[in-house]
Length: 289
Image (cartoon, rainbow, N blue to C red; front, side):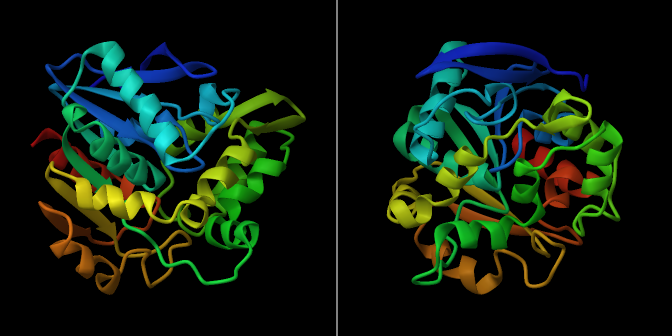
């Protein structure tokens, strides 16, 4: 499939949402990116979903939708995604949610079941345990690490930004042209003060939602009527063991979500399950089914 997306805008509350589109196939796949990412994180998957139309918005506060104001949160992002599908007359679609995008997909499928044929949750979508009494910002900094640290930094050149990411433990052994394309899309400003287009305020608002509204995702999971497949990495955000979603966290949900299955994608971490070729091919296989 052609890997350069076509972009268009969709009217949403507060402005316009930028959407990337790959392919012109008869079946629609909606890709929803992670908390500090953009539509370009779906690029590796786009290489392998021939015969479909893959659409992926920059969620508000990210990418070319970076100037869109709040409210943020899973319900707001789900409403924006619904607006995209309604505008295109494209439902029901297969929805692929990566990381935070998986939670958005769950809320979208629960609130607008007419728009979602199936859910493919990529290392996300199930509630994670949150320690009691912990400060929200401390938790976000600890979990997301370099991904959120770079949001308040400036970089003297494109090369310096790429070097910052090359040092990330999850990407050191799996660097690719797709990662560079994703990072190029993320950069804005002029040298020597380049920065990410992702809004730190949006990231923190979305990251805090499990504390602000802890019932939204669990209630949405219980309400799902479409088939759900969860793809799990074997390592976490910093390429560490254990992964974000070990068996003991996933097992209770197998009897709660009506039509749920899960699959481990071997030798992947939270990033390379989407960016690496093995992970992208696996995601695409499930999106095409």
